[in-house]
Image 1: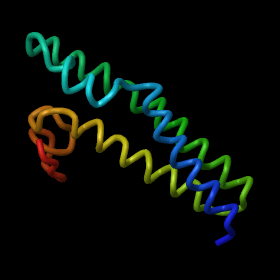
Image 2 (image 1 turned 30 degrees about the vertical axis):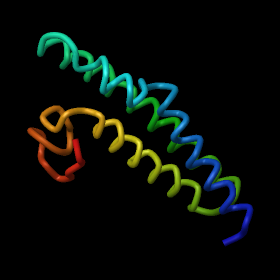
Image 3 (image 1 turned 60 degrees about the vertical axis):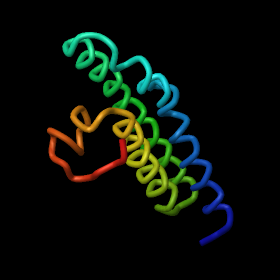
Image 4 (image 1 turned 90 degrees about the horizontal axis):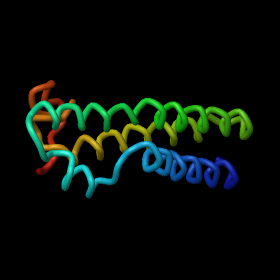
Length: 114
């Protein structure tokens, strides 16, 4: 792999993480404020948080695809896709297990410490 391709893949992965911080609250904010209120209010706050996954993921994967076309390598697309999956897992990890999409009531495929 060319050094330029590796560098572009690293930049795309970092920018993918930045896209999530643009569309979603911080880990601290989720842990501190999203879980306050009635069960209905908490569920609504979590739905609002998850609504940021879609635009952030689209931005990340489209950016990775565009850079892959420019570099003529699939590596930037793979890097952005991995970064997207990692960021979604991190946001879900900010929630208590009973609210997580992947762990808790929705399936238990992965387990994160609380």
